Image (tube, rainbow, N blue to C red; front, top):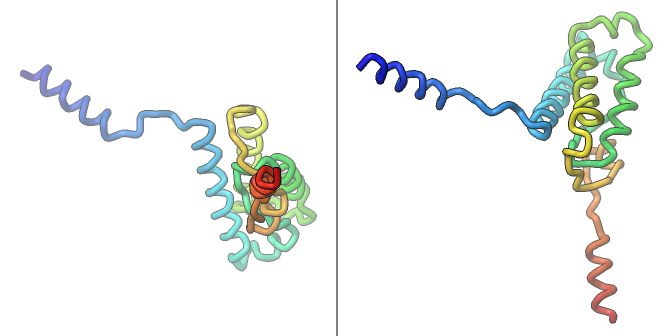
Length: 145
């Protein structure tokens, strides 16, 4: 009786916990959201607003093939911030650490595991994706024949 009750209790605990480890995709997606939230806090906080003026605008989209180049450039600016006091602020240190982790995940750990749906580099800078007209053009070319 006790063994059955213990097994039932263990089984119910296992069902309630998140047992599956994060995949490359889920970890990069969650980390990109964390970085965007942190960037929003850095831009809006009076303590780090001056530090944020140096940072380039970036809208992280792990589905965009340009993310590796843009993230590398962003990481360079964060690592080499002109102000030493900004480099030591806790939010800036956390931004640096999370950006390094995301860059490592995308370029090394999950290399070739992630699928990029677009290569619109302007969307990372502006946050607005321009429509891809290649499929429409192909359809027009096929209709002309």
